[in-house]
Image (cartoon, rainbow, N blue to C red; front, side, top):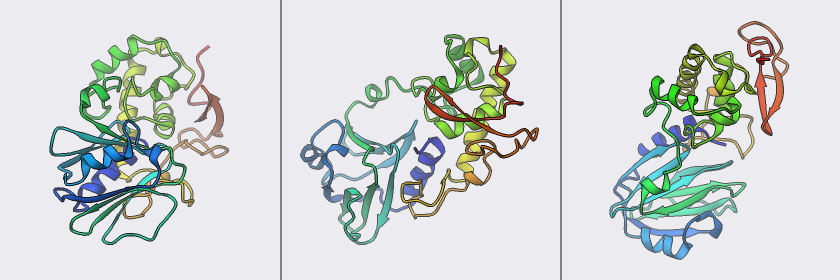
Length: 277
């Protein structure tokens, strides 16, 4: 699933794709359930003739800003991605939303597993009311300390909870916990002030590193994350622990292990990330 760095990369790709301020001529929806909170007919009616004014990210959502006090949010879920075309692309069963602009440009939403969702939103504050703060722009160390102080949960599921902090997923949580030398099953209530600081800085570090590398593309399959131009992310080349089972820890040389935490595949160094008794 695309996480904060992947979604941020896609947003930046879309912003330089020359699709802003262009009136929409037509919208084709080939899978009705991709529209999450209204009907395809109403969704299409609302957007035709409008133009995208801006695009930004909130958590794992892409937010398209339109003219008249409404927004479209897109969650890519597992396999959603965007393609920009200068002419209508050959039909694919995985092209579920096709937006045609009056100048002949197309935005194509490709989603192999069909889990992604588009929403037509008239109250953005309400839509994101249960979404946690942005870790890179809305969260100071003191605020993070206060959030941790209110919890007593295992660290991995806590950090994956989008109502706690927005944007983190399996990859970057594993990387951050390794960097902070914290076991993913450790309870948040047992962290010292120094532990909390290390975790805060680790989250900042791994997310910035992921953005700088334009996200993580694992393997070569069609269900992987790809940028708008079809190129791969590069973060997989600098990951320290995620999917490194059986390889030596970059810090101490101990063999990386794969465990299950809250039903999620998790990668740790058993030496660096000792579970607190």
